[in-house]
Length: 56
Image 1 (cartoon, rainbow, N blue to C red):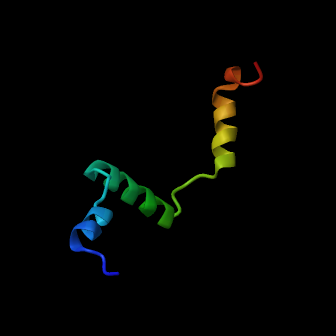
Image 2 (spheres, one colour):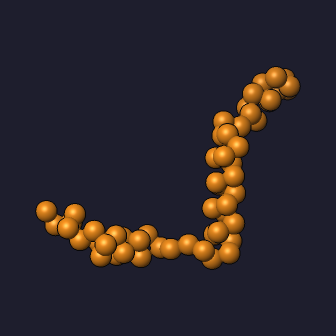
């Protein structure tokens, strides 16, 4: 069964706005260039900076 042009266009239509696309592209570029931190590092830094919010 051959898919019609309208249904293909509807399927390919992007639900992201230009700002969201730009943010994703920038994030992917950061990853490609090694500009990222591990989850573990972020958690450790958060606990250091906001220690009063942990172990309540």
